[in-house]
Amino acid sequence: MANILLCCGASVAIYKACDLASKLTQAGHAVRAVLTPSAAELLSPQLFEAVTGERAAVSEFGSGRSGAMDHIQLGQWAELVLVAPASADLIGRLAHGLAGDLVTTAILACPAGRPRLLAPAMNPGMLAQPAVRRNLEQLRADGWTVIDPETGHMACGDAGSGRLPEPATLLKRVTEVLAR
Image (cartoon, rainbow, N blue to C red; front, side):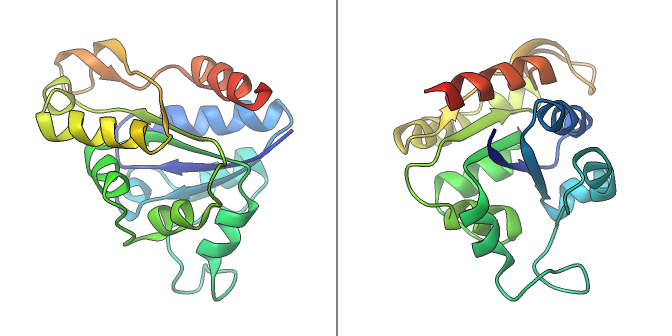
């Protein structure tokens, strides 16, 4: 079983990430969730703690921190990084190596060669934007496994490609990557 760093961007689909964290934990993995500050506005990190039994984090600063270099500890602990849901903003920051929050710094602190999976979740119009497509291609070129979003009805009322895959699908992809 693996140490999985589950990084969550701000998307309505974050509720699926909490279910995924539970399923990964039930499968025997150790899961630590890290949320962007915007993601933590949508879903409390405490829910991730409840289903994983591990501390969930949003920031390296303030009373919730565990040490002076949480991002380094998290990155070194992770045997696999899974970004789900990956918002357009988070995808762009990862594609350009920007490190302005605990999610991006922990990912950059993860040793090279560790598996990295990313599951975009956003409005179909956003996903179709050339900049988002370029950023996803850059991440693929950098060695990320991009899990294609599903097609269907979105929370905003639109329909098309951009839905976060179901937790069972994401669990299957993680299992496949770890088996390699």
